[in-house]
Length: 250
Image (cartoon, rainbow, N blue to C red; front, side, top):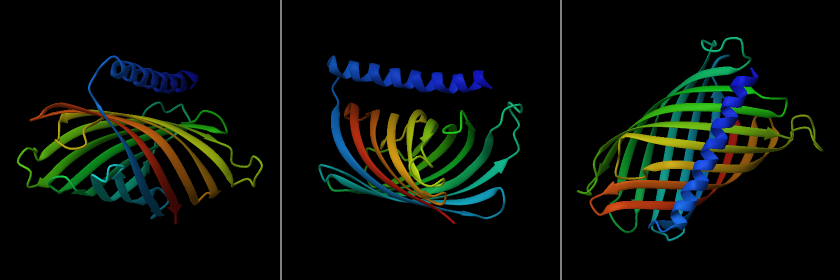
């Protein structure tokens, strides 16, 4: 059990190191742009049966330059399953499938609409009473609808996210109330690259408050790095993202 936990912690440390190396390369002279973004999302979910859940994500995103706004509606079905790997560990596993709709309102060019089906697998376990680790593997198909002739219209990518959550529920508050601190790293691999929002890595530390097990508010200050090639050449973006997430289960 300890060895598997150490593997997850090692992965998290390696991604943090890669982030540090990327920042160093930028300082050495790589051309890249810098943005500040604001993301707001409402994440309700409903338990359909003992092991199945309906999850919704409604979001709004914008950039500090007023260059664009992005509107998101995403729905997914998650089913918890009996463990089929590493059966001797105490953990939870689930399959996830759904579709996302993304409307991109571009103030400096063409607008676009993206349809994004996705399929995923989640594996998580408790390191201790207050520390949880979660692994999330996801495959996304991306269908882009736009009049911009410089954009391709199909993309396919893999995503892997590892999140460590440090919970202080019950400390200075009731047993089911209190602060918690998530730290996530997500890596993207493009099988077929789309011409918009081609992420490479996201580093996402945050802090949240749990009012009760069904209601949480979470704030994050994240670093996102994107890199993609288009007709104008190689473009890179370093983004600082301020994010607020409201989580409610029914």
